[in-house]
Amino acid sequence: MKALVIGATGSTGEFLVDKLLENHDYTNVVIFVRRPTGKQNPKLTEHVIDFFKIDSYKDLIVGDVLFSCLGTTLKAAGSQENQFKIDFDIPAAFARIAKQNSVSSFVLLSSYNASAQSKVFYSQLKGKLEDKIAELLFEQYIIFRPGLLLREGSDRLGEKIMVKVLKAFNSIGLFRKFKPLPTDLLAEKLAKAPKIAPNGTSIIELDEVFYFGKSV
Image 1 (cartoon, rainbow, N blue to C red):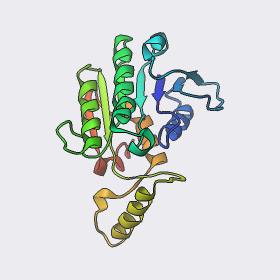
Image 2: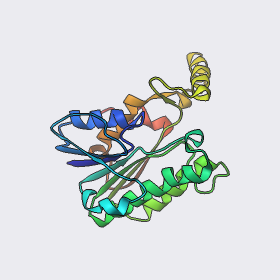
Image 3: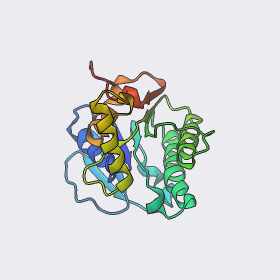
Image 4: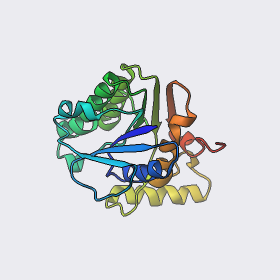
């Protein structure tokens, strides 16, 4: 399979690229990035692009499966408007072109509680993206909705605090459903998903991610 990846330099996306390169099911891995990564591998092709001119690169968005791990924080984006452009507009544009180019599978890293009807901006944004991609009717559409992620070297204070709180509760048997998920483990699940999930739409909720594909 030929894999396409956006969000390849993020905390999950970076691990995902490594997992795809290690996986013999994937013969080619194509990543779209804003700046060179310096990563070298015979299976890897890197395209440095302007993410706000995606249609200019439509001939490059060709393969078997597109993975979207693209996302930012409100703090990094600076405003809800900018976050929407990054978290919604860019993945939606890639999905549209991928569908036009006969990419059959789309794997989306979404978020717990994603819903277009949510009153929470981030959850609503992710829900709207899920729905937008669903309209394209990919042969296989896999949505991951993890909860809190364990990111290597995270500088997000709120995230660090929540991880410590959840770990404390988990240690006494509480809130096991919300156990923090290491990004390298999530990346492993994402990479395996196209070979495991059936055609149609599959939604992997946060309490299912840990067990997804375990018997495979």
